Length: 255
Image (cartoon, helix red, strand yellow):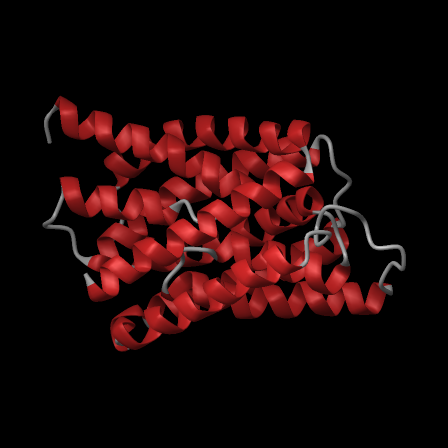
């Protein structure tokens, strides 16, 4: 790769870190950039290298959020472990599933998410007046982590978005708090998929670690902006990113 290629990937990694920290979906920025610059990469190698980059950026986002937002570690850590296990299973099944059937389903879900958020302007912008029980909170977090973790290993883009919507809808948490919780789960799912890809020899370590530095910068900036600008900013960003994901996946599927 020449200097221009490196510049493109470092810029994409920074942008992906910012988007991932705020609402998720950074993979839709970085994966196309990887295939553009290095078309010889197999899908597994591209996903693996992206997971290495995303894992470091997500770690930085978790650290930044946890300094300002109280975390329910006793519930989030087991859920993150669950996400790691299901994500590793999803990564193992990547080569077995025909994504031409999977992507249209994801597009429909994303359109539903956009409509749902648009029609409920108060969703995620205010804290629910009736707090869910500890049992319900633990159940929602654990189920979301397991199911969405599996999706993260299989495909990936939008994992953080789905987690944020799940927490805001079923637990009544604000988008900023939902984003902070989502990052912990996403850290687990990234780790699970990365572990599988590393063991099977798919990770391009030198490139992934170089992009990781830029991804961390983007993640720290994104998480700080989410904390300072609040849930309204996260809501708008979420809608923009969801629409962009639908367009990107549609172009990938039908273009």
